[in-house]
Amino acid sequence: MAELATIARPYAEALYKASAGDLPGAATWLDAIAAVAADAGLQQFADNPKVSASQVFELVSGLVPGGLPVMGQNFLRTVIDNGRLAFVPEIAVQFRSLKNADSGSSDAVVFSAFPVEGAALADLSTALERRFGRKLNLSVELDAGLIGGVRVVVGDEVLDTSVKARLEQMKVALTA
Image 1 (spheres, rainbow, N blue to C red):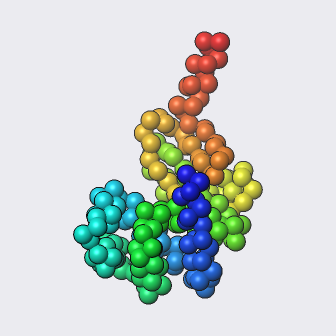
Image 2: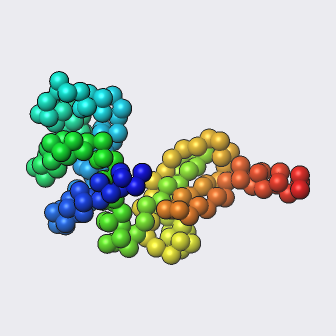
Image 3: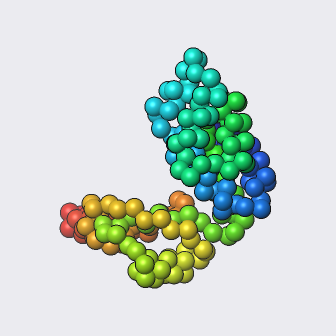
């Protein structure tokens, strides 16, 4: 995994510097490219020696919703020409990390048994920002196995207030 991060870092840093004027826009199209590039079938297609770089570019850029701006097209051509398409998801992770460090925020994933939207999400965001002491970029994922409550992951920190976690704690206490 260290090799993946080592190869992805220069691309992320260069893209971060080049897109300093529009970091949110760059993050949006980079995440879209990363989602497409993470597909195993696409990787197999791109690694085929009978497929040209322009064919891979046309396929990937065609799969990105809304198309790519000129900077996105140039970035995509660069990673394809250098045989680094498989590294784009890691480049996106490192780019987001640089962007968050600059803005003093962190990405947070909220796992919930039920959809969290609107005012409830805003209240949860406020409470979590107070708890973690920094601005959070929340994304919500459903996990019916939690039964109720939420499980929040911010970097390497986890806050688990789910019913499932409480039941596990009770089980450990009763069997000890």
